[in-house]
Length: 380
Ligand code: NZQ
Ligand code: ZN
Image (cartoon, rainbow, N blue to C red; front, top):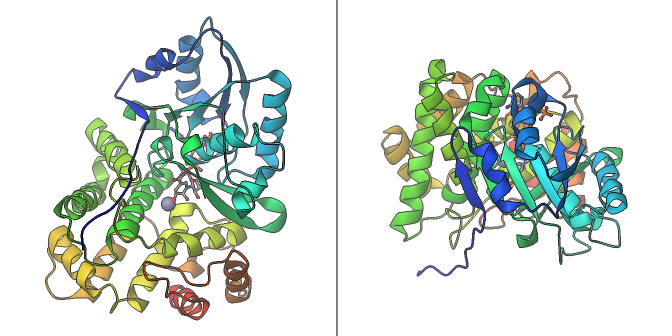
């Protein structure tokens, strides 16, 4: 079957040390800029000061406190501020949560209704304020993609939207800002990027040598970083994680080919109910999902075995290799290892998947709620 796709990635990338200063190329003195950040890590690693000095002479204000898994409740306060202060440019400085939150702020600020409508699919984004991103945690690819994931604390919901209107105009990827990342966040970034690539690769066979070859390069690169975990404080190691995580979810490797995303959909519910980090939820779900769907995914698992891990004719061994890779960076694949997890996993997660319309997911839309239940039971 021949490929058909539309692809556009308009985000200008400024990669490398010292690139924060490049943001001024995209801003004008007439802008009213809102700098959005999280819990304050940018004040400990010099990023805030670099942004402040780049913005000297510009008209800017700030909004801090965007939490990991950004909440509708917090972001709504920023929307009020944008409207009151007539902000016309959003500058996100942080990881996926801050960037996703900024995308929400950019869209909700130009919408007359409640921005949550975008998350529950009752409204489509038709415009958004322009935004730029300074990435501090390579993981999600949010810095140059169209996606955002937002949580509503009051209802234990974690939902997503995608819109070309929230593509960042520019993204600064300076790997030197990673020096303050904890092992937990570095491992999360590696696992998240690996699973993003799998969601777009470990599906059905396709005919493009470019898509599969590109995905395999990313997977091999991430596996190599896991196997050289002891070097994680080296500049070259950090640089490679930033490169690989960005390319894993900038839209290209998934264009025109089958995509899965079932691990993410189940994982989001686990984060919403039990607060496990995004990547932690993925590491728990993915191996069980692969085991349950091993027949359907047999051709691509075999291809991945051969081209990524050097394993021939043994798909169970490929899944074990993935698990071992997660374990080697300190991420468990057993849901019960998380203290917050109770004995109500099935009764919480399955109805929630159903309420969110996730009743036939995966590349062939055949992962039903029954199969999700089987996957979750295997993950515990
Ligand atoms: O709050 P701050 O101070 O920024 O601290 C953060 C946060 O505590 C910290 N951190 C970030 N950069 C740091 C740093 N600490 C020290 N030094 C630095 N340089 O790390 C913690 C986690 O940050 P967060 O932004 O939550 O992590 P991540 O980048 O993994 O983002 C996760 C969020 O992105 C969503 C996830 O669901 C989750 O909500 N995703 C977004 C996607 C997208 N937009 O395409 C796709 C993904 O699949 C994912 O769902
Ligand atoms: Zn992810």
